[in-house]
Image 1 (cartoon, rainbow over the protein chains, first blue to last red):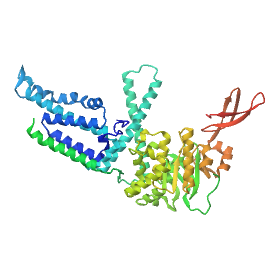
Image 2 (tube, each protein chain N blue to C red):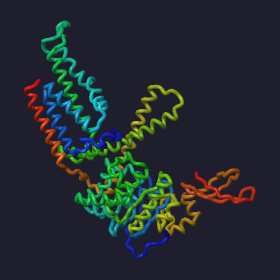
Image 3 (cartoon, one colour):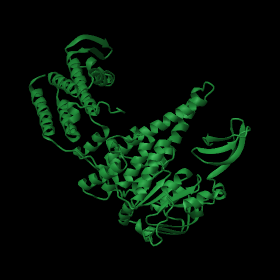
Image 4 (tube, chains in turn red, purple):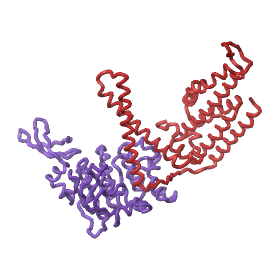
Length: 256
Length: 292
C-alpha cells in the first residue's frame, strides 16, 4: 500500500480512469449487497479473480487480503444465526428454554452472508490495490463527495506518513537510551507523553501548513487539478460493470 | 555576484522600525529598517533565532508587524494582503519554507505544483503550462506523479521551489534553502537559485551558510543577535569583516587539532575550510577541516 507497487503496474484495471473505476466498483458492490443468491455471488467472485489476474495482481496476495479478516469479523456476526436459525436442523440440543442446533437455513444464510462480504471486501481490495491513493481520493468527486472532504482526506493521507516517521524516530530514540527493563506502568506513561508530544508537533505543523497554503493564494475555496482523460476503453469498462451489476440483480431473482 | 542593482529600481519592500513579538512576550524582530529593490539578490545572514524566518514570513504577508511600518509592492502591506488583493500579492511574491514537508501538503508532486495556479483560478490548460514550466525549470518533470514521502531531501526542496515558481512570482523568498543537504545537492540547488536570480527576479535568501552567499547574492543584510540589521553591503565587504561575523555569531573560534598541531582560528558554522600551517619541521601543509 505504501509503495503503491501494484497500482503502478500496467494491468487492465490500472489503465482504467479512476473515476470510472469508482463508479464500476460502486455498481457491483450495490449489486452484490442486494443479492441473496450464492450462485450469483460465487460468479461475481470468480469474475473478480479474473479481473485481479488481468490486473497482474499476485493471486495469493489478493485472496489472502480478502479472506484473512472475514472469518473473524463476518463469522462472529453470523454465528448465532447458524445455531438459533429456523428448522430443519441437523441436530437439536435443549438448554433449558433454549433450543440450539445446526440450522440448515441458518447455515445457508450464513454462507451467503460471508460470500457477500467476501465479494464486497474483494472489490474494495481490488480497487485499492490497482489505484493510487491520490487518484482514488480525487475520483471521489465522481461520487459528488465535497471538495473540502477530499482535501482533508488527501492531507491526512500525506501527513500520516510524516508522523509515522516521526513516531518511529521517537521510539528508536527511546530504545537507544533505555538501559533497564522498563515496567508496564513506565511504558504506558511514555506512550501517553509521546502522544502528547506528537499532538503538539502536529498542531504546530498544521499552523505552518496553513501558512504555506495562504502563501500560495489559498482563500478557503478548494480547487483540485485533474489530468484524467476518458477514452473508449473506460466507457466500455463502465458499461461492462453496469451490465454485470444489472445481470447479477436480475439473475438473483431466479437463482438461489 | 558582486554587482548591485541600479538604485533607480523600484522598492519591492520597505520596512521602517519593524518589530515582531510572538505571544506578546517573545521578541523575534526588534526594529528592522530595510529596503529591498526590484531585481536585487539579497542574502539575509543571521545566526539561529535571529528572526530570519519571521522576517521572510512578514515579507510574504503571512504575518504583519507588531510595530513599525512595512510597504510591499509600493503599498501598505496590510492593504496588499487583505481580501482579494492577497491573490495578486501571492502571485508576485512567493515563499519557499525551510521545512519542505510544510510546503508539500498534497498527495503528489504535480498536485503541489498545481496548487498555486489553481488558487488563481487559471484554466486547466494554463495550470498545466505553469506546472510544466516550473517542473522543467527545476529539472523534476520525472517526479510529477510521485508522492512527497517518496522524495529525497534535495528533491523535496526542488519541488518546494517549483511549487512557488508555478505562480510566476517576481519576488522569491527562500528560507534556508540548503539546510540539511549533502554537498552535491546543496550546490545543485545553489546553481538553481543563481539561475533564478539571473532571470531578473528579486531573490531574498535567508541563510547562515557563508560559502553560498557570494554565489547567490549581490547584497548581504546581516541580522545580529539583537534582532536588528547590523550590516548591509556587498558580499565581498561584509564577508571580509571577520569581526562583524564573529559578533553576529556567523563564524567563531575554537581549538582544534591537525595531527600533532593544536591551534585556534575562525570557523564558519557549516561546511569545510582549507588552511595552511607551518608544521614543526618548518614545512607548510594545507589541511581540510570538516568544521565543528
